[in-house]
Length: 66
Image 1: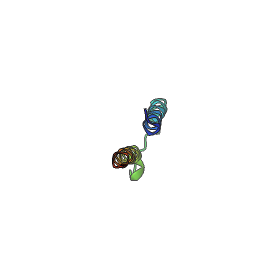
Image 2 (image 1 turned 90 degrees about the horizontal axis):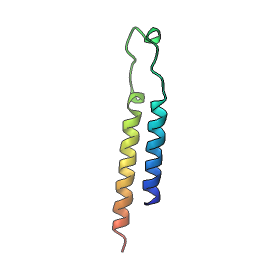
Image 3 (image 1 turned 135 degrees about the vertical axis):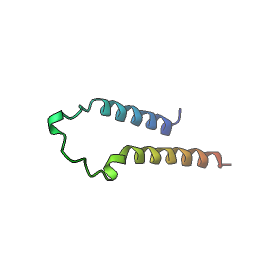
Image 4 (image 1 turned 120 degrees about the vertical axis):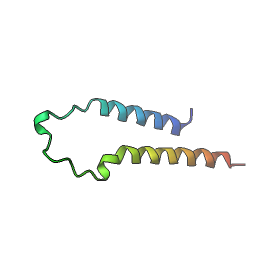
């Protein structure tokens, strides 16, 4: 297994286990209005896209070597 694939696997497992341990907010702390949202709601999608692009770039660069 390449170092990049091992790193991506480790990163995925670390993030998914950390997210599984985050407790849900108590009903009393839920704001009356929905949150404004923004880019913070989509950080995990952005991270996933960056990782996929890095993996594609790594393997395409490796294939073109002579």
